Image (cartoon, rainbow, N blue to C red):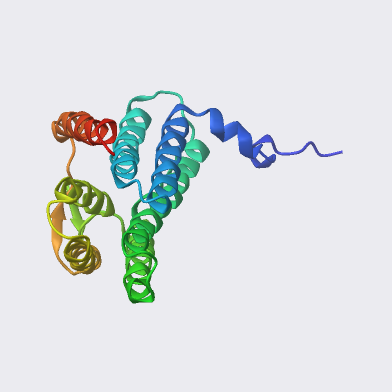
Length: 216
């Protein structure tokens, strides 16, 4: 009787959950889910903390994967798919819900929410097929940049009227969505930029944390 080919033997789904880069990716997903939760509650300072940490973990999982030895091809392939699917939640669905919630779920904000998600999945699908233009260049603006900019924009929340800021956020997100799928080349931030992101994450988390402490 022929023995089963071990290379083709079924692998447990949960076995990939213990892979360190995937743990980091799932931590980013948790941050995104928390951001969605607090956005629905209209606690936007807490939502922004969750969002920026989602970016941090998104950057970190790739760095861990590149430096971790002993990972096989299946682990790398699974990690790439997991990262892409989590990006849809963190960088497409989450900002669309933030836009809807800030607009009090008005139907006027539905087209914008759809555009954010649609351009996000189009961009990620394109990247999964074609990859980078070269080692340090994307075609279109990477989705994580949307979040870095959006979180910074929310530092000014409350300085103008709610209606004016909702229009500003709407326009900003539409501009970013257009850049995500535009035929323009943008740099891939890596290397020392990771340390800049760490500082950015800590500083903005501190500012939004201070806002939470002094709210009400």
